[in-house]
Image (cartoon, rainbow, N blue to C red; front, side, top):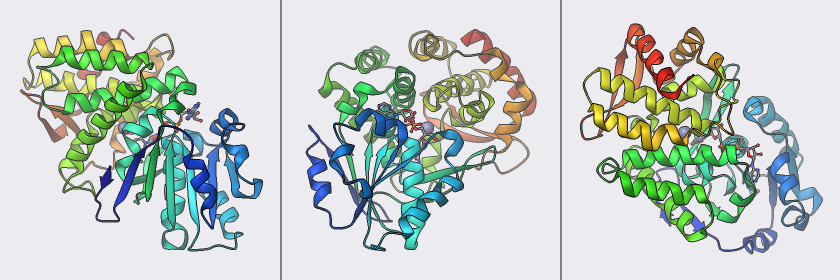
Length: 360
Ligand SMILES: NC(=O)c1ccc[n+]([C@@H]2O[C@H](COP(=O)([O-])OP(=O)(O)OC[C@H]3O[C@@H](n4cnc5c(N)ncnc54)[C@H](O)[C@@H]3O)[C@@H](O)[C@H]2O)c1
Ligand SMILES: [Zn+2]
């Protein structure tokens, strides 16, 4: 798949095996950057193939998706003899992508990088997003750049080792794509079947098809608005509340699961405003949204839903323009609109409703 971008065009390659590693070994000047978790899982099968001096292993988590981690990586890269001609290869999930993408876009005003996503969320969603983001203090994703890798290599075999919690995070984002597709509601049975197949994680080709479909939906919203000033904003559906909930749960609720909860929140607001039908609202909650919040793997605690803390976090939303809150809402035929007048009372009553729906 070739993807056009105003910054630079790039390609997505769907790989059947790990032979692409041999191609990496042929690159004249490269460095591999990987988080310590993914390194441990694939040390024998992948990372031992690279000479030790070509490997940088970093500790990566939401708490260290920061400029501090970026600075540590700069130090190591500045020691390299190769400069602007260096290619960075990143293996990992969205956090890896964000950190390594930020490094690649800023060092020497931009060097080549290749990204191998290893989580479902990164494969279906973040990899093609062009964005790099860092957290700053309690502000999530507030530093960043637009800078795609030159190549994204997707091999779904990485998903075999992905913990269930993180797998569900990807399922959450994919559900969002299906809701944004337009016919997801009229075609709810079909959507449910696909999500079941995805959760089953058995058939390689089925998972690939779903990932590709998700990517295409995302690309259709990015088209003509790569820099996120208009239509692309709608991809933020579920994210205003979700992003606020993540830190309120000390990141115990993973990104995509927080997004699913954020989607329910947005739907509650839509229902209260008379924008969507009660039947659609109930059907979605019953069949698609609530069942995909995996309570057996993520312990959703009452205290994560602190009214004041979530509100404080929502106020930090970088897309906010006035005193009220911004929110992407579904309307009648599930076309989305962005509002910037969510009042505080409306927020509070919707939060109460949301908690009833998910039972916390
Ligand atoms: N830049 C963007 O456009 C964009 C878009 C969406 C999300 N994000 C960001 O992505 C981050 C979430 O990314 P994520 O969900 O991919 O998670 P992640 O990068 O945090 O990875 C999740 C966990 O799984 C481990 N892991 C990764 N791949 C593995 C594998 N194959 N086997 C075993 N363990 C593996 C990681 O070490 C980590 O512990 C968030 O910080 C979010 O803000 C960025
Ligand atoms: Zn997201």
